[in-house]
Length: 477
Ligand code: HEM
Image 1 (cartoon, rainbow, N blue to C red):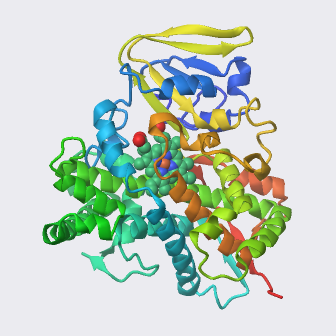
Image 2: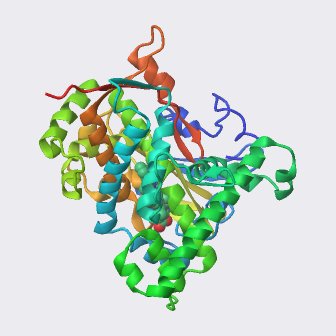
Image 3: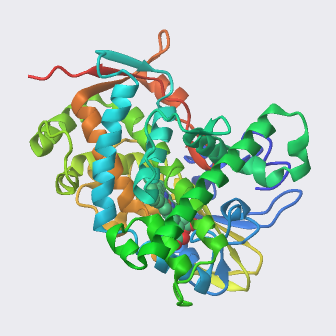
């Protein structure tokens, strides 16, 4: 999507930025194809959009002629090259280092910390003492929650729900939230503009400086630990930051990360692990609020598996398949990573399925390939009656069925991390609280869904807007 179409709203004549969501019921049906090409009217590169898993698989394949374009992904490289931004051999190196941190120990930690932060949030917000709580926008809480879990489990940061530690008057979580929301402004605003008396730009600048300082201190402390204890550091604490700093100290070309790459990866994990999970948690709660019958079924299931256990362990969390399926269905319906792009650097051929089998299409160099995750997840051939919230679609699903995490050699590294966090959080919340939508005067559930559950750009990811919800404490027998 190029200027000026990108800045104008989506309408019947202009796609705008949100067409994959707003036209999800019509775009591919109109052209009777799951793969369509798009040639910008005034400026910009031609693009091919697909809602077909077969075509997306070809676009995702590790071929030398397909890459993530460094210019299109400038936001991802803001702090340094990293596992999300790089291609080919360089990507393999980053993935080798970061991937090794995603194992049983980190998921055990995620289960523990999610339960701990849940109770801390309840106490700090003073919800524990209330019988009902009305929240105008649950997103704010979910955003902070997801940030807390990645900070604690990925980076060993304390991240208390209420933080008093400030650097130049700004707390760490405040700085992170501002930075997460302001990346587009940061890449598009020249440095001199920050000297102007514009309050918002000053706040963004301060947040970037604060965060960079926090991270510098964190990395220095970890480096000192390596100097004092060598490889024992990795053995005693196998978290993500330890793995990344260990790779920075490594002598091997295959696992070495430079200082800049180390910082780039630290920030990438902070943000990749934050927005997508918080969007999905918000959507899960909003959808459950619309489906009280689903909540009732889940409460019995949760009681059977964890009873009144305050800190359920990983094995118990993994047994809560019905709660997990609700989360997976919410991610299908509201995929935070909505549009994934690749670019061709040479001519390729895509085999596009049609009624007769498949038709080969030659794609020149310089074409943008867009994997439309909304298109895929609302494709009625793959998900019959796609507007219906039906968690049973995911009962017994295999890892490879979870298309909303991508697939192939770049499948999401944090998929089990986010599923563990979400299953644990939603189970504790549903066991304690009934969730209902806060309706406006005379509003029906269908109208609430229409008003609230709309996707648009929120910070770095595509997400749902403010979801107003009422929580009512369940009366325990
Ligand atoms: C509901 C939550 C999440 C969703 C829907 C999601 C989705 C995705 C998708 C679709 C991709 C593929 C991107 C591409 O191929 O261009 C991806 C990649 C990635 N995700 Fe996630 N993600 C989630 C949570 C997380 C979490 C919690 C973390 C970290 C703790 C994480 C870390 C990453 C990383 C590092 C990559 C890059 C992998 C690579 O390129 O090799 N994600 N994610």
